[in-house]
Length: 453
Ligand code: IFM
Image 1 (tube, rainbow, N blue to C red):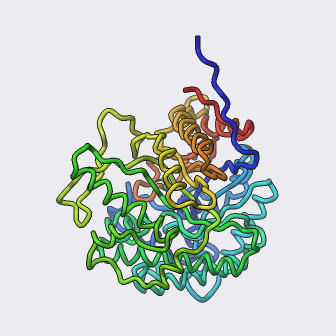
Image 2: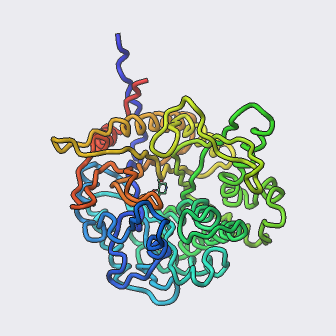
């Protein structure tokens, strides 16, 4: 006989929601005074993006935000994470403020609040003003100062209605994909610039926390969203174990340690040698501002082997055989529990917010107009079971946001990767809630997930 599924209940005020980012959904790339960002520039360069696609129209959220807020309400979301396009607010990334840009986000926030949805804005999600990149971008210290100015002005304009703020989304990706591998805008391949960018992103986070604290009510909660993964060696060989430790230092500890311990990992400094930027104690103190929560973006683990050809860290990621994969990564739900408990044990963040979790699936509309994304339901369920385990182990989790509310522009991979709880027909912009969206609405309604293990 089949065991009846157990309902795993979550805390009463748990923030169930979904996440998006400006360039991935808004479109309206040059409307109402918006300036150009590095993504506007990068997408126009041949060969950079799948089939030459761009976010110029994306899923037209800029014009359809009301319809999208209604979708969120239909799903029963308690929180919605979006990002603010710096270039809508400051078209040149400094100085002049574009009131229409601020008005867009202000109206969106009102629309959410009217529907009982908590706005969770992120100040930076990859779309640096092109004018700041022309002046050197994140490798330049000046960019961190400009970011603090922008954070303060956004905080003053919107702070009366925003309960949760996120400074940066995934600074690792901004620095490494933008300045090391060059897969993301601005498409630079230079380890030195990538390391300088890393430090200035962290510094800008600390400065932005200070600027926000000065601008917004004390009740506002401020955090950062980091992409983190447990790192496992590909074998028991000593070399592979050392490679995994090196990879962990770059991916996880390079961000967690300055933010929570006020220092860079010694292993990282030693490994990178003269490439590692000069860092003052004052900068480290600025970076380590007390935070109200740590945002965790989790998709998969990293399995790593020794690779002497990989510069500096001599480690490379591998895809272990015999495992289940999505269109992008290994499916490894247990890694979420491992990560959350590790972060809690090692860094003691006040609270932890799962700010992204999701999976790309090759969804399509069936003849009857439904999208049957059972694989996404399975993925989300398995990760929620692990989230619940972490809660039971004492991790102070406050919420869980699915990436993403809508199918959208997946950076260099264009529109091929669908992550949404809602299907978007990219021709007509018609939205259809997928099976996973309906399922997630049920999870929210019962404030719990069925453990069908
Ligand atoms: O789409 C991205 C998002 O912009 C940042 N986190 C990972 C998502 C999926 O790759």
